[in-house]
Length: 114
Length: 113
Image 1 (cartoon, rainbow over the protein chains, first blue to last red):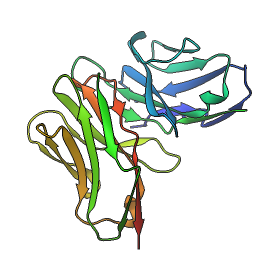
Image 2: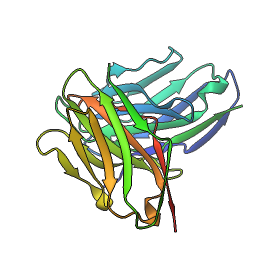
Image 3: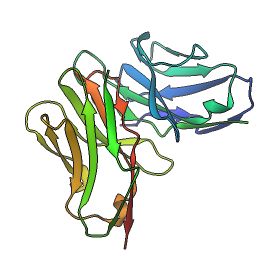
Image 4: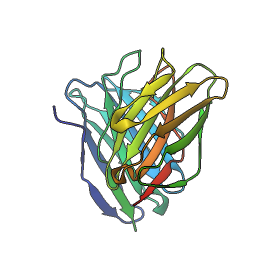
């Protein structure tokens, strides 16, 4: 069974640009969560999508947005990039639902903002 | 609000020595607790989890953790460190097991020969 895939793996952008990151969950998983990992702030929850609906959102500015498609693939978008947006962005998928479902993480997309 | 505190950003042990990584949490409801490991340039891999039932939880690669409600702790241990255990370890908590995880800052485990 293929794991969670994220594309691209590495990305370099300049301040003010926007970027779109993609996540393909494990087959059959309907929930996709996004996390930002930085040396200073650690791992922080961005948002979660389940069946194309945003189910939960972390404390990030509106420049960070996401969506989920009918095949459960998810994208996140960051507009008007700032230097502080440089981070590893991790995607995790799970079956979803009301009870505990183990989350499986992808390898991440490393975004560098110059 | 949930929070996780991991004592020590770096822990150094010799190969064959006991590994002890500390994690304390705060949660308003009985939590689900997790330990993840991250190797360089990789995502997170689940080592073990506590949801309900037995408070001593065994995971992969010889790791185990004990949920102690009275101490609000979930420390990770391994009797004998191996060079391949060198990585960053994250403790995480989730209210009622929902998908949102709150992570600690992480502990880098260094293993010397």
